[in-house]
Image 1 (cartoon, rainbow, N blue to C red):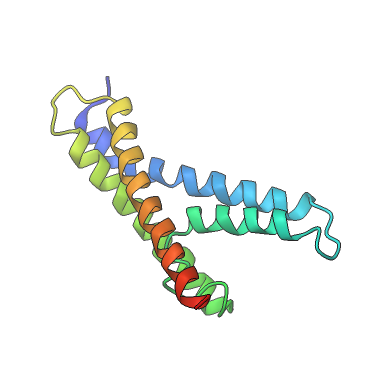
Image 2: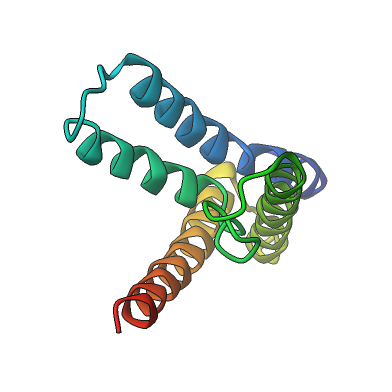
Length: 133
């Protein structure tokens, strides 16, 4: 059993693992898929979906419409802060119980991640509705 102090200290860093894995999967899919004319539409949609899940502030900062170095840097930095905050909140919620374990932290992190992703999907849905009017 890990001490509550160790859980609180390491949980924000553990929260960064999921976006790194998602970005790695997006990179692999993007770099390994042979692109032709319309053959790219399906895989690139999947790549963009993985990127959106990994970088939840991307739509707020204007990606993919304004994809410059400043926008991308701001998106990565702000999304990293979101993930660190989620890890911190998950650790604080999990360690309210004295005998908290990593499983409890990961469960709390999963709930918070699901909430962020639900907000992201609903925001993306609203964006689609507005843009297709």
